[in-house]
Image (cartoon, rainbow, N blue to C red; front, side, top):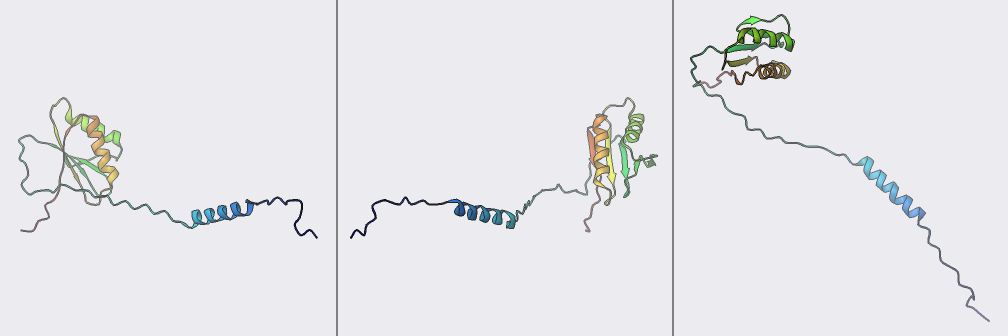
Length: 139
């Protein structure tokens, strides 16, 4: 009586179901994971002091109200386009050199309006630019 088989059965290991399970787990974790981008931007802003620098020349003042309308030396422009602002500044600056510019914007002014005014000033080479602030110190 021969209890041992004569032929050897080749053992075949099928990895397909294992790979399927691993891919399903991978997909599950990819879908269920939330990626949260937390950016904590720390900006050190300069402080405005009450002692402002006195200048002898008369700077050009660009006023911007809460709705984004421009005023040059307290005169309102006809629209809020950059081209109109540029033409008005060119007319005032003319051939003057070293002209200083003060931007006075309302606290609720859209950021776009302030950036547009600064961009137009840079296009006209008005590099002496300052932004007017209010002193909120109660002393």
